[in-house]
Image (cartoon, rainbow, N blue to C red):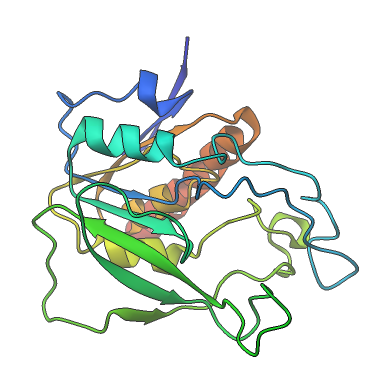
Length: 231
């Protein structure tokens, strides 16, 4: 049995999205950072300038392949924006890819090569994407560094946490009022949806990350309400 939390305009589900979401739901589009299918075992961080090894040895649920991503995107059949590495197979129905340039402070990769992988891709599928004007297919938005001042005791909320600004870019160009993230992690897409005036439905299979998402979205909702009251 999944756990459900309603926080402002967001509805959050703890559990496997494949057993929760349904095509009959009035979801408009998917904006997500799914497992990349690379079976990553984390060893990042260290010292005072990184995450202090707090994520060392952590594995992401469902990251052995892209079956969970492809199953839910195909099942729902909705417009999608899904993050990926350069070597991740595109989901069925992909129409294009946008490049996210993460900043000079990122990237390691194969140290024998003179280039570092300081970028990721965002696969785009479906119809209805729009903006007031067409922009570049390369987004220059700095990734969240391992040391992030006083937020979350100076750490990321998630080992692969994405900037709210990045997710908001796609939320604001997606069709319709209801955004879904089947792999919501620490809730960044939900915060982006809130800031964009969209309704949000999120699923997360990891209980710890689910609790973090609830806290972050609740805090963002309170801040939004306080800001609105002050106007």
